View 1: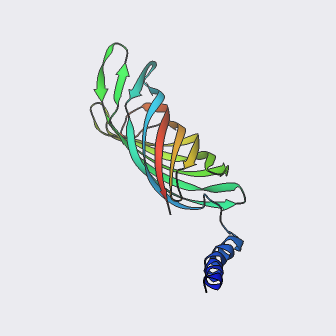
View 2: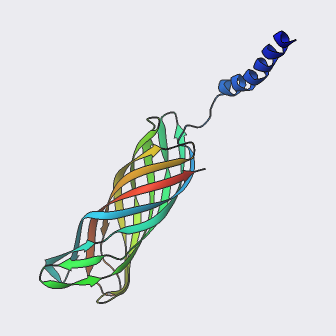
View 3: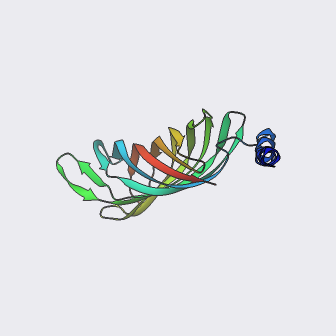
Length: 196
């Protein structure tokens, strides 16, 4: 009896696997939504004043935040969009002047395009952003719309998780509330995403 039972069991388990593997896939490995957290810091920054063009300061401090996005995939081409919200409490450093503690929030909304390299996804990103200085001595509450562009790479840890490294260049001008400040900085962040 075992001579007949064992082959039947093997066929029963093998058939669903074969059927699944033969089904065509309409989406690639990077398509779908993702939600995650990030931790970053500026590797270069410049804060200038229109009223004092010869004075330049720096923003120094780490930032943390969340991101949510959605991607589609056509063959190896991956494209989509992402929104991110970041909070930081950096220090404005200026030669010959006392440091100033500030609280900054940044909201980004951008497009992404990349190339599927299996577990790796190198991509570029481009979009608009809004930076706000909150309750800051000398600034009060002041904000500005700006632009950003950057490069990143993401690596799949498993079926639904990934980690990434991203570098973004931001530029903000014409802050409101009478604050004639301009901010240009390059941020590097480490990201963790859950894909769904």
